[in-house]
Image (cartoon, rainbow, N blue to C red; front, side, top):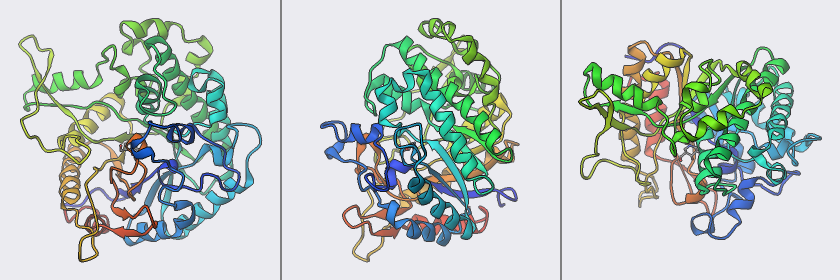
Length: 451
Ligand code: IFM
């Protein structure tokens, strides 16, 4: 059975992970330039200086999307190409590059889904406190307004933030991502809040600049799936999915979605974070309704199994020995698609896009010149079947974006992890579609009928 009519099939990337060209056309430095150039921060000292060289090879990327019958591309705009200093005067050369790119996508019949912030904060703003400074939220809104006004009528779908869980949790909490800070809990929550405030101001700015544009946010987070179909296990899995534990609250959907979907902060505050919630200035609380998204983007990779304990409370189940996992070591759990989307739909009642899903494999060119990646085909097949079960049960899922179109710069893992449907030789930039690209092309062409 096919997916619903008008279901969107796409692929996703992010600016710093694929573009390269970091010194071109007046682009300013971002925190990832600084971080990746700091010794010891990324595997092998890898940087995004060249990445997939999409800044120059973008026509090939569009051809690849077309060859896969994909009708949507989720990519991010590099804030520092538009505002090299984060704010102030826009850079015409930066806008011109995205003009060429967006126009070519549209000419190819591919709808742009633009992410405004995929972790590459202008370094100049970081120097003024980054997400610890509420002015960053205002600068983000000004950037969003400029982009929405410029691309009015050409870009219809925006995601403000990609995975605040990682920008804040990993960037300001554990410090394994840029800018590499390790803030105490209250300060961490304050930075988190600035980012949510930024989403709200930006959503408002986009809608003012282009009333026809639709705005979403693309978080990730812990998904818990029930050990059995027993109602008690399902209730326990749902509760554990949205629960916030001190020390682990950054890795949940709740603190990203509750406040902007009208459920407020108070339900998510517990322990240490309650103090920080109480400290949010009234003016910033008042902005929350502006951030109500038109849809939710979910970046789904895996989940944990939960059962109801004797007292009904969630109990986390141990994974079986030798459980299936990807090259990076993440568990393979297709059920995360079904239950994750169901739980988020039940809680927020907003349309959902799967804005990321995929895996890293140890892909290489075989003697026959091809890249055989049966693991990616099997993984994606299983996750899509699970997604269709959710759709069949009434969850409003509008589209699926595979992560990623290309092998690319995997942040602190450097180029070690290959997530692409298309293999990239990082020495030459040569693209080779993997077997999974041909397989996914059939899925897209038949709207999932072949699954
Ligand atoms: O590569 C990342 C992406 O930038 C954000 N979501 C997860 C992907 C795989 O780790």
